Every structure is written in structure tokens, then in C-alpha cells.
Image (tube, rainbow, N blue to C red; front, side):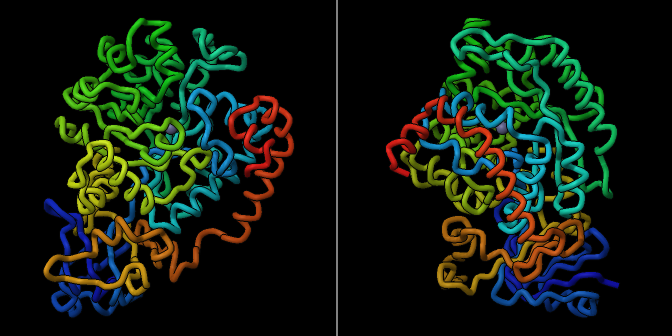
Length: 478
Ligand SMILES: [Zn+2]
């Protein structure tokens, strides 16, 4: 018996080289797996009598998006960290909140971020955070979303960063504890809830730990057949640190210690020369680009198109965090990625819509090591798919000739609220924009309360840090 049959849709399978469109297409699901994909007329006899039938006439059906690099706990700080110089972002807009943010606040932030993700069509989240175990239990598992979680490993403790222009002080015991906690997370959560949650290692960044610890984490990962997801060349703060310590750049330092290979997922990579992007591509490093976040925080377009032009094999995009992005919305992220890279290269042919859709689905899944199970609609893959309503003003008209305009309109016109139904691991998680696994109103209310608590407590520190944003607030410009 078929559990779910989706019929009559424009099915973007993401198989082959492009979006793999099947017009008047259907997808049949049994349990948590896709069992058939094809023309509705060809499948309806065998699979049409399903437990649930979704008529996708006038809708696009595509794999859910893979948001490959995310810190959802920061969602309660949305709008509190943009429009400031890069050097101020962490120290003057993010750090003032840290002492007042409890694990409970972070969980409320994550719930809000996950809600926003699902409601805009993301079905797989690559989340990195300080302590993922309670968040996995309280948010990721019950929300129904697919998640790849890692605990950040660094040697940064209180008092590590008294001055951004002097070398950070590392604490070995902090590194040991964080490595142990990261391994505990993996032992408990890798493969949990029927494989919907997986884990990997995440050494924080080259400027936040010793070379010895960095290589140890990579060895721990490799010994388990896992990858390491690390922030690389993430801006001026890191560049100062790496130069102070090693007299070189991040990419050259990492290459010099033999860190770079295809078990590394490098996020950001915007503080790089073209030659260094070539080194990353040559070594087979996988790349997660976060264009909206880095555009806002650093004023730089990360080198997504360049990485691909130089032979980079695996690229994904990520929404990063809400204090500097400011949203977790892959439909917006695809458009920003395409536009910024077109302008960076002064070439409108860079990153066409079909390629952006692939990066946000199948190629993103491959980048984070889940390409065998998700990212495309084909028999044997996990049933992670979304239905997008095309019968709204900004998605009209829907045309098939002389060229199909559905993929371009999804990338350049959609904004998230067209996502009507979300199926993850064979379960209907959102139907007609109603989230079935979370209490939407409660998540919003609790995140609002958590944000107010943190902001009220941090107000003096935040204003004393005197960022550009604080100055704008003082002048009454906001
Ligand atoms: Zn990050």
C-alpha cells in the first residue's frame, strides 16, 4: 500500500544535469522512502490508491532544501548584528549577549529558526552549536526536520579574547572538554530517530584552536569515517589572528599542516585570494557558501561561483545566523547567492537558476555527505519533498514554452510563503501552511520572551560596547 501519492505536479526531480523536470508528474512514497517518480498517468494505476493523496496541480514538487551551515540558536538575536564593521560584529554585537543567554534561551531560538526553515521549504539543516544534545532532544527530533548536528570544538574560554589585535589565549582544558562533548553527541545522536539525525565533527576555526587540536579533531573524524565542518577564512578578525600567530593566511596555513582534503567542509572562505580558492578546489575541499550572512557581516561576496569555476566539486549554501543574514530562508538565499555572484563576476550568466536549485538540493546534500539518501526525487531516496503553490501573483505565469520559467521563478520570485506542504522522512510536517509538529504561535511567543529577557539583561553591555548599530540607535535612526 502506498502511503503518500503526490500527483499532477511540475516535479523537479534534480536528477540528471539540470532540474530533471517531469510535467504532470507524480511521486509515490511508502514509509519514509520514495518508491516511484514519473508521469502521473504512468503511476496512478499502481500507486494512486494511497493513504494520502496530494493533488499538486498548479504546484511545483521538489526535494526539500538543504541549508548546510546554520546556527539557529541565534535566531532570538535577529536584527541585532547587521550594518556594523566586520571587526565589531562578534565583539560588539554578538558578545554582549553571551553572558546573559542561557541554554534555555538558545533552545527557544533554535525552535524559532527550525520553524522558519520548515515553513520556507528547508527539510535538512546542518546545525553547528555549543551544546547540541538538549537541542536535538527538544527541537530537532520532535520538529520532524532532518538535521546534521555538530558541537563546536575550540579552545576559547572566558577571557580568551581581551583584544582582537593580540593573539587569543587558548585553554587546552576547554578544547579537551569540547572534544569529549562532541564525541558524546556523536555516540548518542548519530543515526538517531530512524537516521533522520546524523552528526559530524566541527572544529570551530583555525584561529580558535591550536594546530595540534585541529589535526586531532580531523583524525577523530576520519577514524569514524566522518567529515569535519569548519569555518575557514571568515573575515578580518581571523586574518589578524592567523597572521599574528603564523605569519600567513588561513588557507595557506591549513594547507601547510595537511588539513585540507575531501573530508573537510569549509564554510565561508571569503577572506581569500583567487589563488587560495583554487587551492581549496584542488585539494577537494567541500564548500558551504553563506552569501547573505557574509554580505551583511563582512560586505564581501563569498567565492561560490569562483570555487566552481576553478574545479571545486561540492558546493552548498547556508543561511548561517539571524544576527547577520537575517533570515533562515533558502528561497531568499538562492536569489542572494545568484545575484551577488553575478555582480562579483560582472557576468549575469554566472550561477543560473537551475544550478542554484541544484546547489540548494542535490549538490548541497552531496556536499554534506547525504547525497545518497536525500537531495533528489528518485526511488530509494528518503521522502523529503515540498509542494510550492505557483498560482500566486508573483509566480504567474507558469510557462513551458519557448522555455520553462518555473525554475527561474522559484529562484528569483519565490519568497517562502508559496511553500504549502512539507514532507520529511515520509511524514507530513506542514500541510497547507499549518505546521503539524510544532505549535507555531507558542514557538513565536516563547522566542519573543527569550529575546526580551536576553536583551533586557544585556542592554547596558550592548550599548557600552558602542557598535555602529548602538550609535545609530542613540541617534534615533532606527
Ligand atoms: Zn558559522
